[in-house]
Length: 68
Image (cartoon, rainbow, N blue to C red; front, side):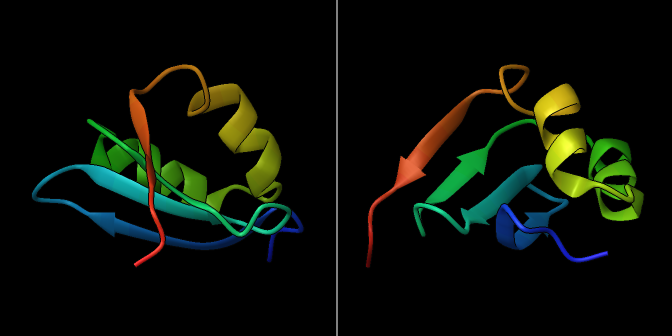
């Protein structure tokens, strides 16, 4: 199901970096050390914003990626 808060995601299994673009801010954040299983669970979650809040936000290091 599409998310109203998360516009786009990309995941690199080699680096375990989950990149997320948010609807409200339009900003991209890279979350580090995200296990492939966590990303798979996120992709399968019915409510992606809730899964993000419960299982990713405040659990992984992250950095704001400046606009290119």
